[in-house]
Amino acid sequence: MSTEKEEICDASLRSDEEKGDQGLSYTQQPSPSDSVHQVSTSECSTKEFFYFPIPKNLRNDPERPFEFRWSRVFVYTFSTTILTGNLYYCQPLLIEMAKTFDVSYERVSRIPTCVQAGYAVGLFILCPLGDIFRRRQLVLALVFLTTFLTVGLAVTRNVVVFEVLSLIVGLANVAPQILIPLVAETAPLEKRGFAFSVVLSGLMFGILLARVIAGIIGQFALWRTVYYTAVGIQAVVLGALYFTLPDHLPKVVSIPYWKVHWTMIVLAVTEPIAVQALIMNLGASAAFAYYWVSLTFLLGGPPYYYSTLVIGLFGLVGMAGVAAGPLSGRFVDRLLPWHANLIALIFLLAFSGVQVAAGGIHIAAVIISCFGLDAFQQMQNVAIPNQLFSISRTAISRLNALYMVSYYVGQMIGTSAGAQIFVQYGWRAAALFGLSLYVMQLFALLVRGPHCSRKTWFGYEGGVRTQPRGRAEQTSIQE
Image (tube, rainbow, N blue to C red):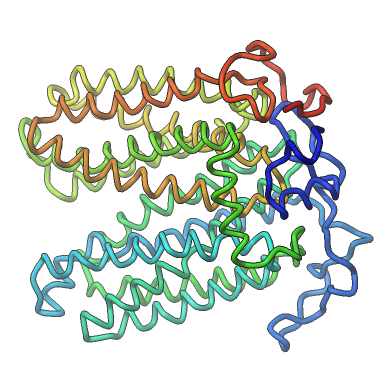
């Protein structure tokens, strides 16, 4: 390691490295301290929230660390799918809500904005707490809160109350963003990409599935039924997590709350790996959002003129692409994130080219591009976080918060810009916009090679050779 004066001038990160949990380049194996909780046994507890007992097999015991289990990964995946859906149930139901609340479409369109605004705030102020608080208690509290508030969404008769509750639900609905980095932290190195991709696929399924389910239920029953159903399945999630989520202790216990967010800013502007990954994630999420918002306009207009139901069913094509996510995870496990991103971008450029060439001419081009773009976006969704999380294992919740904030900002850019370009200039101009986002990502990737030292901003130090993750060299980070 380099000397202290060359380290990031941040107390918490220096503390991490002094304890041996050094910032990792993604050509390194984790240090032994990565699997050791930085909390004394005196802090361990048999109860949570001062009353409820923690199941014995889930209590923290420094003498017997928790083993990685696929059963837990699948519970986390199910939980992530259901909880992510809370952010998207409202979108297909807005017309029916406008009738119920007797308000205009313009007024009811504020509801998804409130949900997303709350979610953005939650990502920034709540997600980083996973580094300094016990994640079991944090996750259970957040899931209970969203379940309780969803009851309010189902019964309220006032649109203002519905908007306020939607804002708070969005803010509290960040439990998936605590579970996802937990999997990345606890999975063995050789299984990390696959395990992460499984849980991430749950998130993507939640985005697409919520719209489909809400649309179907809303077509044949009152829209409130969607929220009553959501209360029931969230209660199931709460029970499943209570009996499966281990009491992982935080690695960082001395950092004050205000410094959590300061270290996020430091990481975002001083770490070359973080800057590269966040720029690519911004472009990837913008491309994803642009495609799906412009797809609605494309399929609803000439030459297709499809109905809303048929347009909605294209979400199933996207889900088929998302289903390839775990296969992408297996692939990423065999490569460095840099090489996985390069391969993904090559195919994304190819499928984007199909959309540019014939998306508004023949439906086959739309189906091919829809499946291909979603499938290889999933590879990126595994490779980019793996690259970002390699900076520090003790800052993984903060790094995930940065990842999700950039993802959310990218979605806003893609949605607004993509829609305007389509409306003003047509489908091909919008497709070219998507293609340009992939070109931007490729440029951001190529300015910095896969084996550069942690503080190297540009160049190809160490070449571009491919190293399987399990055989990476045990080298120190030189700055």
